[in-house]
Length: 245
Image (cartoon, rainbow, N blue to C red; front, side, top):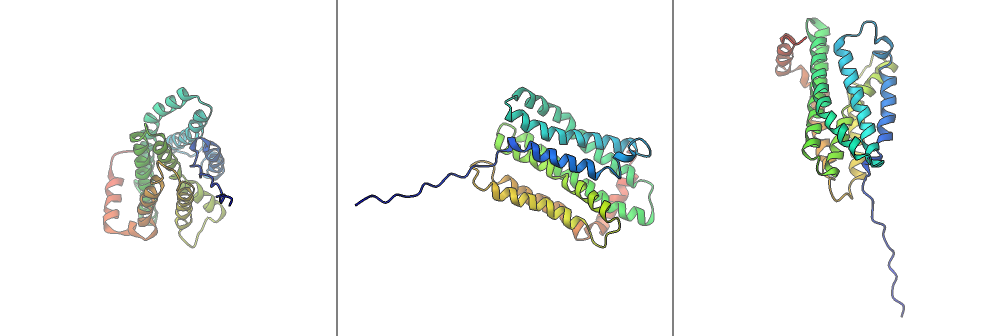
């Protein structure tokens, strides 16, 4: 009797984050289109220095997300380490730019413009928190490449909402519903896809599920009206009164 031949199952390959550069490059091109009406087309007219600071620092971060995996893929590890050291200054600069821009936009407002800006303030602060957490975890785990790369990807995912929502406002400036339901949903969908694709990884596969929880918690107050609570309104009032800008 002949022995039964069992089919050989291919071992699923984990995600290769050294190939993520083109995806971030495509996203950067989308961002340029999204910010054309509100920023790039009037960058030298009515735009404030705080907007410039934020735009330049965020753009530099996106370019770094393109360059770093490319440096790994082409074995230019010295360049990768150099960019990593540059991020020690760039990441805090992004956080500072978010806080200063948020303050410059809310100070001195009253009535309905102030009420709208308190909601936007939450979006800005929560984005800064999730970005900062993702970056901090990326630095803490920098000696474990599988973890480090995944947390760096998460820093890029924080930019989906501000980019996509500008495209939506460009297409329909007066929405009848909260666009964050779509932009946050898109962000979480990307995380879910990454979770599925990453499920066979031996190291790091718990990063994206954990960060999906973090993103969802950060998104909930904006989606369910919690920015109207007395607690957040008191924080917004305190923040607007700070002598920052």
